[in-house]
Image: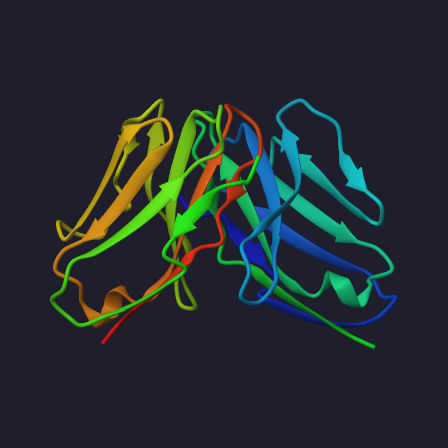
Length: 109
Length: 112
């Protein structure tokens, strides 16, 4: 089952914050977040494991609510380099990653 | 490590021709995935191998698609015969168990 991401697209001004949500209808073992720039491959941002801690890197952090089977990605004080498409990927314990359709983020100067 | 290596980077072929996409995963990774990316459907999982064995091929669209992994360092995705609706970017990714996946640069396939 493909996870559902929201919103589909976001336009921000540099310095503003954004939240991207990901939800699944299945019990999850882990949630992955990736960012893809136009014409490039998806690049790993972070992984959240069942029972694990909230992860963070610089001004990008994420949370994982196991009971609700939901994850959120938080982008704080966005920079121009944050532009791209963000994908959440979910694993339900069988080690395969199913991706959502992505959220397009565009940062304006 | 050079990362996941895919070839070719671009492929243009005529409808009805056979197309073979190739992937070399990162050494030591025991899982390999083939994904297809289009604007409409996003990143679709086509097939997943674990220790060279196909585990889940439920995402393979039809019998025209086949994938093999003869050893731990090589996999192919074949489309025969190809159709215009197969045009997409095909990504190969590899990972160790319960860690992040690393993607190759993709093969942009155009079927005319």
